[in-house]
Image (cartoon, rainbow, N blue to C red):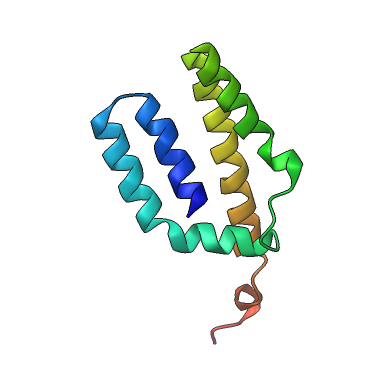
Length: 98
């Protein structure tokens, strides 16, 4: 829940109601995927994986939209790669359907 609130707070800073509504919908729909991601990390995000969150906050404080975009994109890429890895390692991928 705090993850959702944090992302929405950042969206509020941008003062773009369309983006905020889109992000809220995405976060609500993506809760199951996020839960899988968190489970793959034993419900604890390593400090190294929070690097881009810190960069994003620094960029927002500095009002540097390019750095904020870069940090957000890098963070999303980490989650994407982790989910792809997790799904490709599932035991069900080894079932033969003959």
